[in-house]
Amino acid sequence: MEKHLNNILEHNRTFVENKEYESYLTSAFPEKKLVIITCMDTRLVELLPKAMNFKNGDVKIIKNAGAIISQPFGSVMRSVMVALYELQAEEVIVVGHYECGMASLNAEVMIQHMRDRGISDEVLSTLENSGIRLSKWLRGFDNITEGVKNTVDLIKNHPLLPPNVPVHGMVIDPTTGALDLVVEGYENE
Image (tube, rainbow, N blue to C red; front, side, top):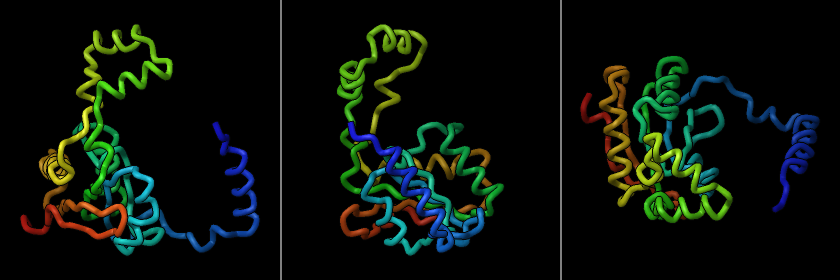
């Protein structure tokens, strides 16, 4: 396994010494007043902000596997609430992407990969017996458009969502950056 930590720290020292950070200086508040929920896919790291015309300081970006909010009171939804109530965001955009690994995620295969990497059957059994249904927790989605719609609906129907906050849904092409609008959140204003 390649160890990256020393390279990161060495680069960082040079980055700071040369004041390369100065071109990224901004405030903690999103200039465009948006919070984006998107996938952690590596193809989107630079592509998504460029395709949506965002620069450093424009938006709050929350990333996870599949751009899915599966727990209405989990950490992703808490981050959305913090952005809306404390960081001046006024709109939410959920951005899934085509060719998403969560669409083909097989929970049973992943559980086997856990075993292969040293997680014991005893641990897996203890979790199951404690009420944690790993096959449900690790489940992906069948269709990216439906996954985006479901997450948009979860946000729109959240009891703590401020009234009149537009919640949009899009799907991005991870090769070209082309965006397809799935849900236009202004329609209910």
